[in-house]
Each structure stands twice: as C-alpha cells, then as structure tokens.
Amino acid sequence: HRLSGAKIGLVPTMGALHEGHLGLIRRARNECDTVVVSIYVNPAQFGSGEDLEKYPRQLQTDVDCCEAEGVDYVFAPSDAEMYGSGALTTIHVAKLTERLCGAFRPGHFDGVCTVVAKLFNIVQPDLAYFGQKDAQQAIVIQRMVAELNLPLRIAVCPTVRDPDGLAISSRNAYLSAKQREQATCLYRALRAGREAILAGVTDPEELAGIMRKVVQAAGPCQIDYLEAVDADTLEPISEVQARTLLLGAIRLDGIRLIDNIVVEQQ
Image 1 (cartoon, rainbow, N blue to C red):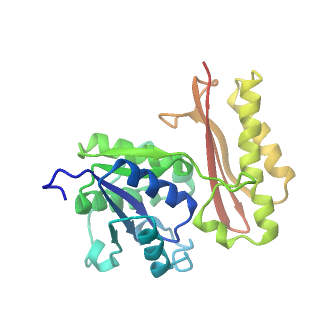
Image 2 (cartoon, rainbow, N blue to C red; image 1 turned 30 degrees about the horizontal axis):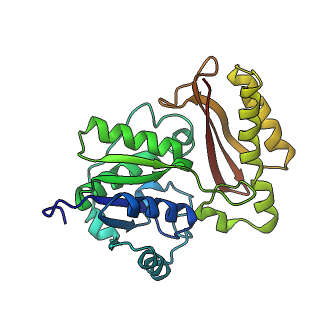
C-alpha cells in the first residue's frame, strides 16, 4: 500500500468497539485509501487494582464490525508480539502527563505513549485517529509525535454521546441502570461550566465550584477532578482563555468516567 502511494489511516483501539470508535473509523475511511484498526488491550496502561482483567473483550464481534465498516486490516497482536519478554523501553512525555488523569493513574500515559509509538512504527500510517473524549491523551500523543518527529498527522474527532449526553465509552458497560442515570451529571456539570463562561464568569475556581455542585447534587461519587485549563497545554489558568478546556473525572462505585468540552470565545 505504501509503495503504491496509498494514504494509510490507523484507528488505535482496545476493542469493545462502540459508536465513538465507529466515528473514527468512518472518518478514516472517508479520508484514507487504506484503513487499519488495531485492537489491543494494553496492559502497560493499566495500574494495579484497575480493570485490566475485566476490561470487555469481544474480538470476533469487533472484527465483524470492522468488516461491515469497510476496514481493510485489523491488527490484533498478542502481548508477546507487542512487548516480547521483558521490554525495557518506555516513552515518557513530561509535564503534560503529571496532572489531571496522570495524577490519579501514575504510569498510565507512559503505557499509552509506548504502545501508540509502537503501533505507529508497525503500521506506519499517514494519519491516526483519536477521540476528543480522551482530551489529555490526544494532547500528549500530539506532543509525542511532534517531538519525536514521527511522520504522521494526528486527527482528533469530536466526542460521540448518547442522547442524554453521556460520552460513549467501553467502560459504560460496567454501569447499572441507576449508575448510568447518575453518570450524566458529568456532562451536565461541564455544560453548566460552559454556560457560566458564556454568562461572563472568568474565574476557574468559581467554574470548578459550579461544576462540582452539579455532580454532588446527582448523588454520592468520588470526584477525581473538575477543572478549567488551557485547551492546548492543559496548564492551570488564572482566568478563562479564548479556548478553555473544561474537563472532569469521577468514579461511581469505582467505575471511572471522564469527559470534557472546549469552550471557545471570540
């Protein structure tokens, strides 16, 4: 494919494909001559006590789904293929990975960057597609690509949501009906933050308080963070910017949910 000059698109996934993944695949199909989907539950990005063992795996269903979407190749490697026996090399992007999800999941982004770089080297795509739902991950990967001079472009695609606003995620399968209802509080909190910005609120602490109240009103949960940060650098801000990223992570009985929205002002 590469020798013939075909444009290659890669959609890296951990499987359990849903409408969010399908959105990435369809955009790749629209923009590229050859589409590759990788399906690999990467142990290096799970911490101790996280859900590596119970993470949903449905390879044949996913392969059938890829076939129906016109995917050309599915790459579903084993741990041995990806890491051999005792890999000694990891990729660490400093600073961007230290706050937000990085603070609550130490080592997570090192695992993500390492496996993604390996996938880029194996597949050698021209374009790779990621979802805005994982905003910190997308920014970290964009920085890694730029600083390692990797010859591809990262396309970040809009978050896909259920009708009630909940960001679609493979981990939503863990939620009971009651938890599923409560989980919508995260997006409602982010929207309340956006409305406050558009109404003139500029203090990030005030915005965090507004978002926190919405989440707390929905019922008991653990808030990892609810913040307003710079949309490009993830740095804390002293006041709202032209592009402000509102983002949050909460846990319902240990089930971790993340979401974000970008608020742009003229």
